[in-house]
Amino acid sequence: MGITERVVLLDEAGAAAGTAAKADVHHDATPLHLAFSCYVFDARGELVVTRRARSKATFPGVWTNSFCGHPGPGEPMDVALRRRARQELGIELDRLRLVLPGFRYRAEQGGVIENEMCPVFVAHTSDEPREPDPGEVDEVRTVAWALFRDDVLAGTWPGISPWCADQVRALAPLGEDPVGWAPGDPDALPPAAFLESLAADR
Image 1 (tube, one colour):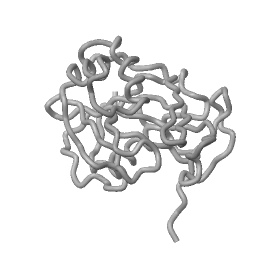
Image 2 (cartoon, rainbow, N blue to C red):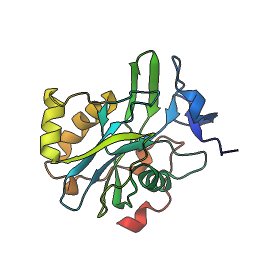
Image 3 (cartoon, rainbow, N blue to C red):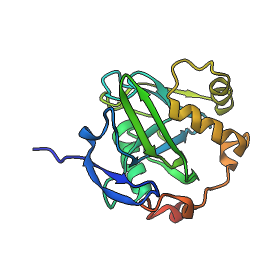
Image 4 (cartoon, rainbow, N blue to C red):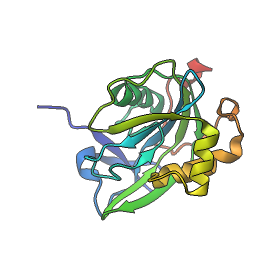
């Protein structure tokens, strides 16, 4: 029998309020829970973007940022990000840093709701995505950040996820070059979120 993946439920202040099986948490009354999003830049400085698998229960087939996920109960955010990057894209992350600690969104498609406090991170990789998890990713593409940003802001990137669109609007004022984006304040994370080894990357 496989291990049941669980997510951290949150109260309105972002404190832990229990756990739930990931497979059961997304529906028409999805409870608020903890997640993360990551924007990964490759060795050429281009952003890795992905199209979500059409088999996914939430927002199938839409383009989005490099990857998203949920930390498990008691799992540091940065540890969860590295785990998810390996699982979903087969890549290792370096220069991982927090940029939008307080990002939160709610979105609905086809009667299924996403309802997350979702801190946003940026990272780099020297790896090429290989054999993406077909249960998560249908397609991987790289694109210059400025082109992606401008298309998303203009509404001309086809089929973008609502959280990615909101995140790009929040990231755009941070500057033209993602390498220079100022790190976010870890103290602004939801109380249930914590970091373990991020300082080692600085």
